[in-house]
Amino acid sequence: MTTIPIQTCEHLEELEKAIRNAGVKIVTYGDWWVTGSIQNIYFDCVLDQKAIEKEFELAPFVVWYEYDGRVAGHEAGYECKRCSSLLVGKLALYGGEQWPKPSL
Image (cartoon, rainbow, N blue to C red; front, top):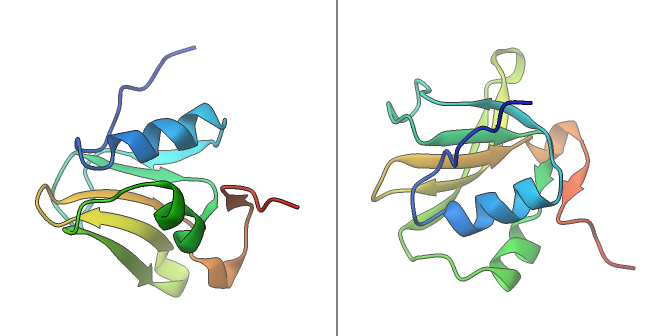
């Protein structure tokens, strides 16, 4: 099995590692039209913004980002404005497994 190296910038790396360690599947990574950066990763989950921001200390220039292209795709997650790097998952509107998983 090929190991994919960390895809995001240093400001999103800790979050990316946590999601990977939870075993969430990577949908795609690399260069996207949105940022022109090669530091992007899309996970097969819905990212829980509130839970993430409670658990992780994100830099002020790391902002929540959403895109709804409907048939052209959709994503929601974090954009590092300093590095033009994205760490995203599915848009909650369309459903999917949540990360981190809600605690009971």
